[in-house]
Image (tube, rainbow, N blue to C red; front, side):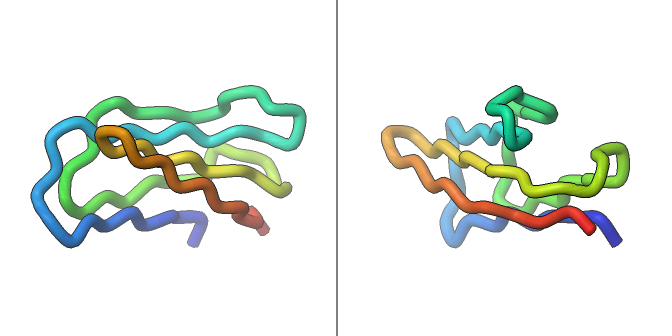
Length: 67
């Protein structure tokens, strides 16, 4: 369907995400995440992307494949 879900176990205060293409360019971002998030990737072309989620001083990075 072209969606990514980002869920947090606890209530969050300052969380954000960035999605990068294979060249490192930011193609999508948000500085306001809530406890449960749905991010549409429908506007992005097929390819491999990197998602970086920041919550306070923690950072999580994952690869994703857009088919």
